[in-house]
Image 1: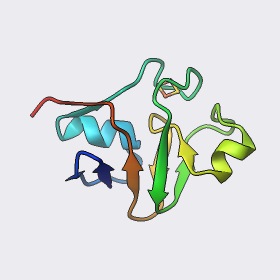
Image 2: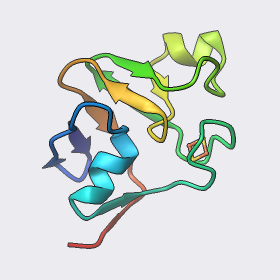
Image 3: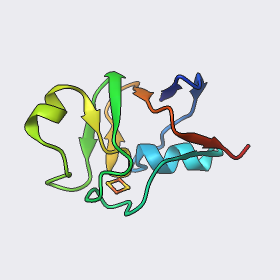
Image 4: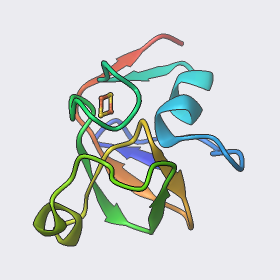
Length: 91
Ligand code: FES
């Protein structure tokens, strides 16, 4: 996964959410509940495909169609570019 506009790439292990993968590499994305309900982490995928750990992530069909995702419950199904300007760089 590449996180833009930061321009950092991180590997996303199987079974790891985009949020967890970023944190494992020192990039703290905006989040609260981490279970797909609060929408605090909402961000857009500009390239690539994701699937979800939960059946009903808190996104409308329109938001999904526009590429929005909830990184706390999103799993990468391909290389992904995530547009998320709110990132704390821990290392
Ligand atoms: S952190 Fe709450 S929906 Fe992702």
